Length: 364
Ligand SMILES: Cc1ncc(COP(=O)(O)O)c(C=O)c1O
Image 1 (cartoon, rainbow, N blue to C red):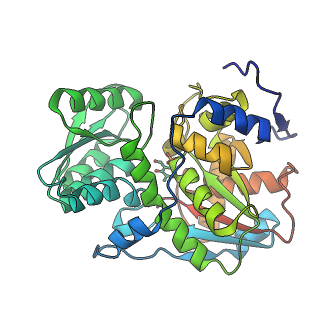
Image 2 (cartoon, protein in one colour):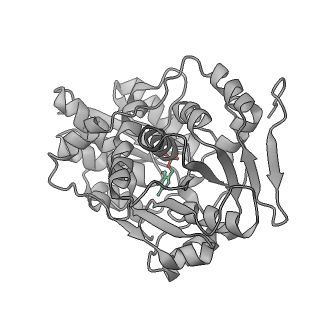
Image 3 (tube, rainbow, N blue to C red):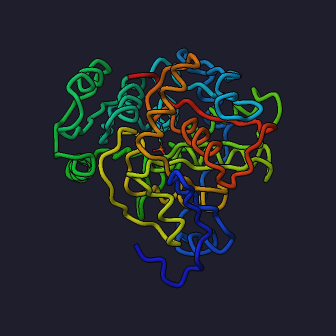
């Protein structure tokens, strides 16, 4: 990972080892210069909202005030946008792939079409549920590591499951090949050169949750902690937050130390393929960033932090104790907040901070 020609970033490593990268204008410019052909993320929240209003399974998710977590974090307020029940699918991902298929259906392009993807969880369910709702077919490639119970859940939504490869990346390569061989529609939640349109629309779907949160917050937050895998969730939330609240909120992207895709890319000044052990924050265990997300976050985020496996577990335990059981992935924003406040990291947190976090999935 080379940062050649890029000014030295402002990086802190506190006594507990948490890595904090404060984005500088130079770092942002370096990244943006390498992504000239990549679009910024959509901020057209009204498009997915309008479609969703026509869906019988759609309902706003709650924004909850969490005083116990605020106390634990030593901040004034913590507000949780709680995505655990989104459309009965267990995570915010219900807003993504299913929306792409709904948009295709609106244009008369979904019925009878086959959508293929690889998934380790929530994204696959969104593809399967969307395909089932709109008379399309879903084929989901699963790596050996994905439990058979999840394969059964996909099948219960009518998806065909193909076992392929030892790890997610191999399953994704299998899905991409199948799309090519069969002229199926590849529906990934990440973006890369030449594959931009569907993930652009997919991330547009995530805007719904932030549009709801903006209306539900009692006042604009001072800080927003956003967990990231390939970065789609974080970039949609960050982009919409800037539209709604301007430069005010400090936006902090949280990744596992084992998968620092966005952190290392911002630090190096260009997209990086990173390495690391497997993380228990499995949904966030993505070693490469989505390019649309990287571009959006280079513009909209302020800081990029890495949390350890232990910090991830502490975050989910704190959520469970406060009455919000979720996985370490679902709680990673909370984990980032707890670690940051206790380690004096220069994120400007204080007793007066009003923090917004997203609980991104239900407990396993
Ligand atoms: C529960 C949960 N949280 C967070 C994420 C991260 O989202 P993204 O990969 O868009 O950054 C995912 C991705 O699958 C997820 O399933």
